[in-house]
Image (cartoon, rainbow, N blue to C red; front, side, top):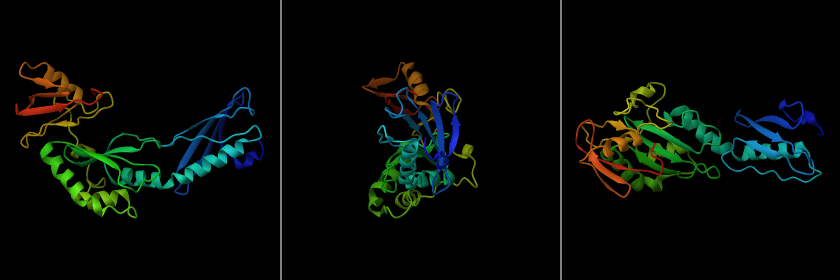
Length: 258
């Protein structure tokens, strides 16, 4: 390993087969790369493990050194700076419901918009300021107007502005502020199991009755409706009654039942 002083070493095992290096990007975030050296090193390239939202594959020849991989690691970090800037602003200025502790590789955020209504966005790491994939979660009477605003104002999206500012402009909303609100102000426990977290899922099925609005975990509501004689199912959609207000409720099952 030549010029090891250029490498920011965090860890090396006694066999010199596992090496961890760190680097800091221009925004001050620290990133780690773990290198696993094989028996035939340097004829074979080390395995590289990073927390990136895109694949990291370092080019390698038998004449390469760890400095070469580290340089490629630094270049990859800088290429993803804009993406992490976008995600950090969202994490710092909004209430992110999922994931609870997002890794650097996470491209999705579920952001609270109000009481039992949220938006799920999927940001493209290569084009982070472009319009992300998004869908709304909540009761139909709350979600539908948001969808209409998104369609009506989509032309206002400006890649020169931040994703957060664009979402505010397009949806004509202000996100609940972390400074003045608690997470409990717009999150409610499941009306069936009385828990908020269940196997990593949070309640995202909401009764559409504006007088009710009780949220449920998908799996809880699924099991509840399956147990009612009055419920009926068509393909992956179950029609039944809300456990709280007895008004009609519809559950569209996704691939996972939690």
